[in-house]
Image (cartoon, rainbow, N blue to C red):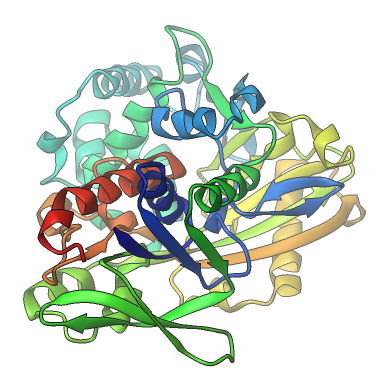
Length: 442
């Protein structure tokens, strides 16, 4: 079979890898000048750093399997994570049950109650029981108003902004259930990272696709998908400012956000289009600081204080060896705003100046001259908003047009977006294409 793939992120490359591995032809088109999407990298201090922070949980077996298949397994390391919570003008340890017991902003009885329900969520496999209730309502009812006010509401507001009270409890269940898989008993969380970088993993995946007989294009965007007699027969693509060219295939896999897909296929039936258009996304805005010294002692710092203009502080080099980046310390400051928000529209220099005073709340000694360099990264369609009964509104991978498939983050459920689930989905959709292939292969 000949399969055209729109998007060179984790899902698109995994699909192409699976197809070419099984002897079929796959051709990948990525509009950006690099592969890997948010897991793509740029150079810092002689090393490769992800544009968006990335790590793996112990449960992320699909991504680990791909890394092994690509011959990069020796680069994987599993490291202890240092987790904290910023609340009440201080950083609290928040990695173990004992840390929770010492968290004095909550009354002791509330700490016990919070710990008990967190434990029960970790042991609950039936996520469907949480689909019809919001995280806000469930946590208030079961963990108490104090726990909701101090921990969950600030974090939900930080992650989902004005949509915080509409998010399904299934989403929060997934976050809690996933994290426990990276712990054993009372041990601290262990996270995985390929020391060659995630960007290298996906670059090598692209190279393997070519070695297996496929093709990979970067800097080439797809303009529209061609439909003939009720099925996809290819698409039109072009380099930026270049001449358009038609490509023909037996099947097409699109890994774009839903709102992009509707532009590529303007004649979608109303019922499917309505499902796609019901999907709401938040963008990701990241400020990456390269410092000459550490900012905090934590790898992952949740910010439960909405007076700070960022929701998370991920200090990459508090887990990953800073010598990979010329001895520099790497800090990600992250937000998930709407595209029409002021924060989204700010220029990088403006955003940095807004952030600097708040960094002193995390470390009173922080000084502007600690910053060696900084980088700003913004991506649209980064975080789908997972509302109640979300599972009833997920678009099928098989679209209403034959031989046309959709694979994007709105279809990852009940898990949240991430490279592991994108890789799993990409390979699954590739197999789906092959299962259906007998009916339309040329």
